[in-house]
Length: 332
Length: 295
Image (cartoon, rainbow over all chains, first blue to last red; front, side, top):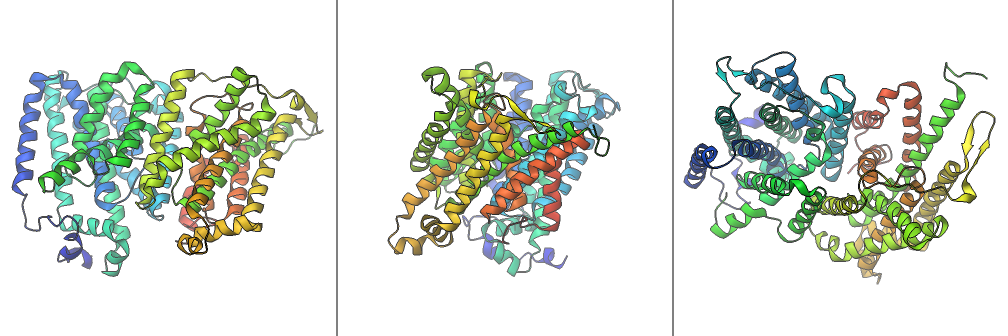
């Protein structure tokens, strides 16, 4: 592809916020935040319930994957539960029925999400804007109906008692504490990979598409290829999150493929700050914590989530990290 | 009794009738979405919740105030439509200068709130709403038994759909509306109050959804989730038909309902996904939708 070699496209990208690093390497404050996250991640299980932190990490990765599409390419997929959920089913099935070790089970889940993302993405990018959101939502609902009926998903019961197994056939993951560090490595690794994608020449083209698609086309970029590639990447990372979640909770269920899950990941990204590196992480932490504390209150969770949507869209569109970034005058 | 391709005719026509009824709801709801989208440029994600709200308000009128079905058919669209107007003035109107996506996210949040509140109050088991006495019973047509109420649902929704089409395509008011869809600034320059027209259009679209909700109340049980699953199918219907044409929305809605009904007869496992499969085919063959204009 001739267009991929052209990296001198800083003109468009530089228009937004102005502070995108074009030099290789990570700006110092981003590196500092990643190191702080690593330190916090290593220390967390000594202070917090490990399963809770693992849940936050899985959803943070899920939201970061979603943000790659919404925040950096400007594509609102309202059906990301399809990739999260189907990866969760496939990895649970692979670990339980095929007896694969966890790393291979997760890989199977990611593979399923990538294939599904390729199929749905190829169709969805044929429509723009609001239609794109409706198409992705409709296909995700199709995946949901499929999961209700397909024999291997276990219908309403889901796949329960998924064995956590031995990592590389050696390390038993039965203890939450051991598993925690594996999940930390997956989540942080996934986020770093997404960070790398965003800040690559490829990522600059994505931002160009977000800012002005016709102009990106006129500059010679094959916009649809970029969109599809991003869609598949995003689906793959969402799948990584879903597959890991299935191993952590030893459960894959219809909740993971339901449209409300798609809505939750939109909410996490929105409240954290879309188009920011660390926003989805913050958003996931906020929403998962809230669900944790309000779990006994039933429908109030839905009402509060709806209210957060409304308030964020009306008054607070930059999200938490977006506001902090504006205040610090830096990209976060 | 004769059989058609191994299917007893009662089963075939029974499912076709059910399909036609589902198609009526698809048609009214996608029509409302199209009218709202045309002028406001937002996708009203709360449409399903407003349909559900219509059914609930009808139930409340009956159980708290003793107001029956026929009055509900008139009062409910007015009440829910007025509620829609309040939402538009207070919230949605603040988003017109922003990307379309925000309208979708805002109305999604509103849908969650409405559903959550009603689920808190009434649970998810569903409330019964009986068929009005004038429409109980049915007709034996020889080849099938037609319950009167179901026939009424199809007729009523056809009347509403055709009425809406007539108002938009054939009257002066509709001409203003179409003009404002094309170029709101110019229409405003001619002295027409475009913001008020936008508000009333949203109210009208919401009222259509509420009307469908009242029609649906005796067919399905009234429950807080009845709109959420329906609206996703309606989105697929809208993608298939394209939102450019009023008549297109109506035709697509009814025919997809019929196709769904036929699938229930011949291959029931696929009946819940058939509309999405058709959407995939349409996206491959004619991405702008059957009646859509390329953007």
